[in-house]
Image 1 (cartoon, rainbow, N blue to C red):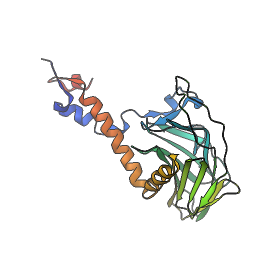
Image 2 (tube, rainbow, N blue to C red; image 1 turned 90 degrees about the vertical axis):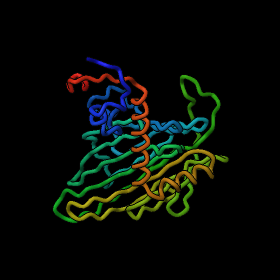
Image 3 (cartoon, helix red, strand yellow; image 1 turned 45 degrees about the horizontal axis):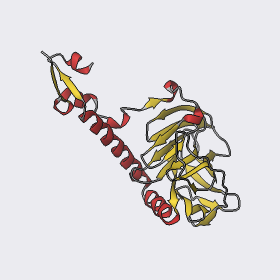
Image 4 (spheres, rainbow, N blue to C red; image 1 turned 60 degrees about the vertical axis):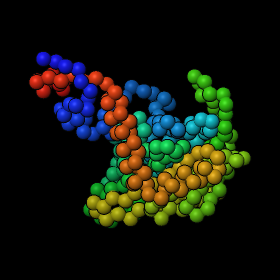
Length: 268
């Protein structure tokens, strides 16, 4: 006998959806989107994910603020390794590649409740000798505000010069800003080249990471959001996972669920 019941009463379904974070993930090989249309969201910010590039973000849309010509790109040892695999979630994307015995995985993650996110670049030495891995980050773009948001979003073309204060870099324009802050790798920004450089020294099998927090909005708000994310990047990534899992769980709590004495029927 079948009966319609709320999902929360189904133990079988609870086991089936134990990992809510991965419920709507999509392997890159199954993704049919064009690269120009690929992105991630968090209800306050959307960023473009050029999935053929290993550690790059293109464009920021955070109504009423935007920077369609924003670019954040990290190279490894002066190279841009080919992407061998990637996975998309609504709020994050991971891309993996390899070059000269070094494995690189990037995580582009949007933080819940803020016009902010992270680009994490994790490097693992798969060789047999200690390696020094240079990481270089290039940034470009300038923020602006717009009230003309429709089916096709507005386009920005403004530029600005990077300003640097220690580990924090800012792309300012009037009272708006895109704030960036690097964590790890002895990273240092250079305003003249609109870039930054750091190095990871890794023993065989060791992993190191560079985190770059970014935020857009009014200058003080962007700086505060960027600082909050950069204070503990791994914790910010965990909060993003937990927030997404809660949203997925809430969605399925609202749906009816069939129960049956047949576990196979409950599953399908």
